[in-house]
Length: 91
Image 1 (cartoon, rainbow, N blue to C red):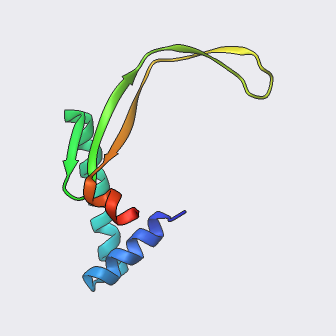
Image 2: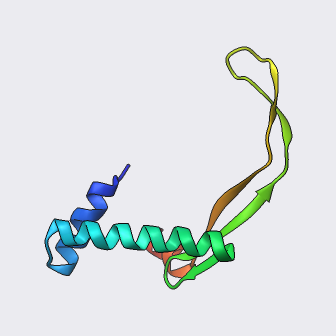
């Protein structure tokens, strides 16, 4: 698994800048993405894909340790639908 630190190092290398500057760029992108997703519910990023929010209703679940029934509250989840370019690059 890649960490945020790995991403920062890669950005610094690709952009030929300091790690401090790369960290600021990554932080700004994550913050802007979060804000836009909260405001709009969908972001399309060329060559990456579409991030979407989806409302998930309350449902019954089970505690995996005890098997006891529990109620899972309604929430909003984020999904990424990968672009064709991303799928091709990964495969």
